[in-house]
Length: 165
Image 1 (cartoon, rainbow, N blue to C red):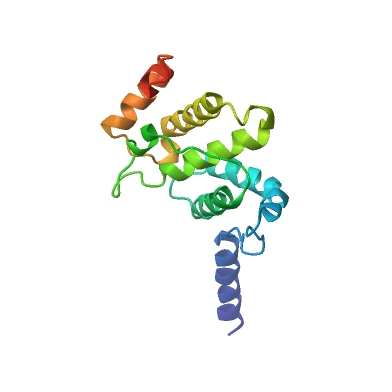
Image 2: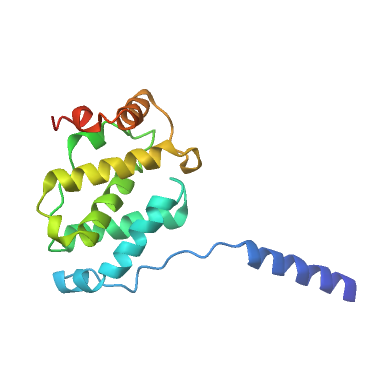
């Protein structure tokens, strides 16, 4: 009987040690601009988590949702430009928009003096997104559009690809 209890305890301990801790953003209010201002350190942390997590990571997905709510309610202005919408579909890479939003938020929070420079914000976000797509560990499906996007970045032609020059 003691052996069975001991084995059960080890199995339970193993389950606890391998269980994932999920980010709980529910306690961070984002209803007002003041709430959003106070949440900026957590937003930056969430953006960094998204940019270093695989596309299917639960904490990354929760962080994406947190960032998007913040973007909608903060005093910052964000432009979601057309090129990002071509990189995903309902069936493939549909979370890439969340990665792009994380990169936008990260740039604006780390470079408040450049927030009004739309091209600088976009170029940072697209470079970060290309770097993200390039890493196989991030589990981004390499569609033709994603391959062309990465290729343009590698060749130093991302601005042209995006239509900025």
